[in-house]
Length: 518
Image 1 (spheres, rainbow, N blue to C red):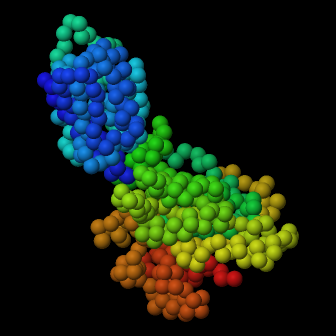
Image 2 (image 1 turned 45 degrees about the vertical axis):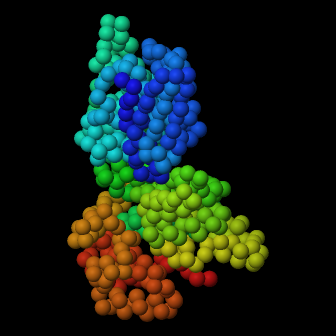
Image 3 (image 1 turned 45 degrees about the horizontal axis):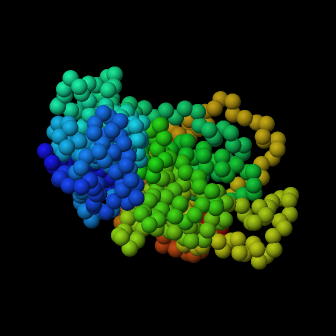
């Protein structure tokens, strides 16, 4: 046999793509050619694969006078990363006649070290899901990727530690000289058990002294998926509140969990622990545009996408680069980020709850009852202008956190029930939203994602509430977007109160969270 085809895979942006690795061997002077738009990491696989094959007990491709041509199809897709090492090695050994098995039912993913060990790669989870859609009968992955790969139900996942172990499991051309090189046969990896464990939150509502209005705003934000802006002097608990908000969000359902873990897997930030709770991302204000929004020559997801289905916390919000702040307009409105490059356009999901924290001024003491602000009027105005009107309009709830009395710091809720009670209220409000949006066959939607038509159809206001809202909207010069966002927040407040309609008290509370124009 001088030809073989084995299936590997890679991700393009966040989309999985099956890649066929075809090997052709012919007589002649030794040559080892890789075609199909390979990048540098794929090109270098020739040396890794040759050494791994030698250490697995077979003749290295470099020791044979053969012209070796390996094609990675589709040819017009850029091939990136070391995840093709395993299928390239198997494809060569099949073509050379050194091993025999049927490769058609399987997908192979993994990087090879020089001694033949299988090294972990990123993006395994969406590749396994794609293999299931393509009706593959099994996927071979490095042992260190086993936990994430096993999240996908309904397809066997074989976690291997070396090339030799994969060959021993698959090879039907066994001879007395071709003995097993590992102690035990590969077995399918058991499906990962999914059991969200809230555990003890790193920051809980009990830890935040006072700030009852801000806690209320955080509960509303969590219940409806609304964006929250926090302003106050340093040390008033803005960061603690943002993390406490993340701790009361509902756990991810199975489909969302697969999506979130797939994103983190492709980005290479998925560790040993599978995410069952919404992610919390808190990039530093010096982070670059690409690291927040995503992109690059080959588009990769940024922090906004890594926060998908969770919380994106931007502390010192005005200190972020201006174009980073303005780039948030699209995801805050459309829940996606579109990255256009000469090679094409990539769309990354970005359904996150934004928590933006800031000081009231550069020195942090503007409005402080005891400490004088040292900022000049020009510096104050420049600082405020860093948050443009369109961005401020997209933040549903604005809350000011004042200084905390030192006497409050000694008080503590020893019962530890505040976070538990807040989470229970959020879960109940989310359940009400699921029931409401099930009519539109979109039960995973939150109030923050209502469009104008759905507001008219699904969010009734009492006549008195509508009258108050229209008068207040005129007086406050609310934009149509801000007007609708007040209704969405009022709907969440009504859900927290377990009320079917929005009445005047819900509207009045929602209005108090709008940004105060100075």
